[in-house]
Length: 194
Length: 194
Image (cartoon, rainbow over all chains, first blue to last red; front, side, top):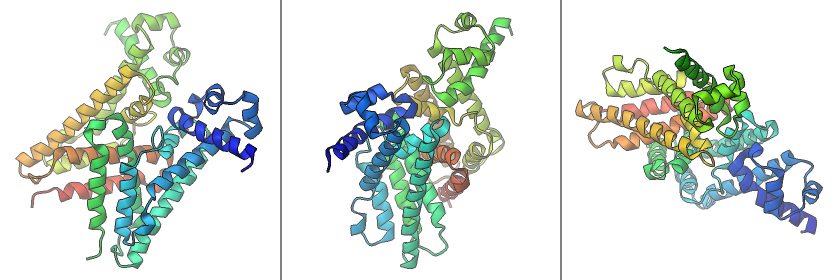
């Protein structure tokens, strides 16, 4: 890896938690430069502007999040067990610093940056398609009933998981995430072909 | 109503959508004064500081949201139908400008104002208790199975509803809210005592 690529990667890795915690507008160039241990001029040698860095930071944070949530899924054959492991990973493994980068970007994009919004839309679409494919494979393998709508299962799973993550960060004692996992586990079981 | 109370109420009603959309730090006193049609000095005649106004604005937005979500519930006797109507109200009736004030304050309080966080905690606690009481009444009336845990039902319902609201604002076409309502309706039916 060239020195330039190395520096670029370090800037992304260091600024990603900052963007994830504080949002696009809430992050100053000064803070970014400071966490990355750089001079301001050097930052602009690697990224044309703050937006380009924020996009790279989101992609990095989302890639890390996806890697964490899909860990071990290839070692599981049953589609229902794959879905359960995915949710369990999201519940039990440490989140990216500042919480789910997708949810944070979704919320931030309400009145925020249009390019970042597009990135979050792409990420949400990719996540939906990934999970829908597992449901469809389960139907092909006669593990999941054929009348189940993959899009319905995935929408409910993502909305419940993301809602519970936000509420769990806010109120640790109520057990939002643990209860969400119990609920979707029973729900996934209810989709099984008898 | 005195002129002072009237002005105070107008400031709250006008600034609440602004706080709800932009968060505590994202709202400048200049903007608040401008939407309320006031002079800066006059604002401080009604509220000691921005925080006190933000708390009053959150209380107002949450009161409006609760009124909308509980509309017609007293006219329904079945506890399961009450729960369904509550969710339907949240899905079908127009949200407070900027989306759910509780979710927005929860998200904002991550790195935001401690007093507002307390207000949101009080609101979430009140909402949970209100719904848990309906589940418990349903159990007393033998409409809901006695082994159902009211706290579990309520946690899942709130997390799914709030997650779906945020995602629905972000991606209107995917139908997150409609699918969330269908899912909890079936879930509430599954709690019924046979």
